[in-house]
Image (tube, rainbow, N blue to C red; front, side, top):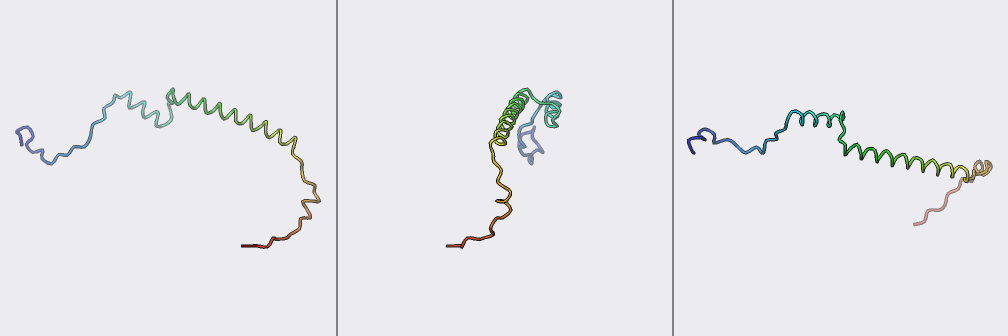
Length: 90
């Protein structure tokens, strides 16, 4: 061993050290907690919300159309159903 590294024989490489400023650390912590949303995620959230609104409006129109056109079965048909089984065939 060289003179500079005397006594450091059992040291292992642990990886690179991540350095960041306090502002970067604080912003990262706020993003993790959900307090701050980055602009890219905000645009994605806005697009997702608009898509949900469009889907809801389309579903409500379909529901209204279904309610107008659907026919209800007569009461006597629903009350007097025969209780039969079909034979099981292999």
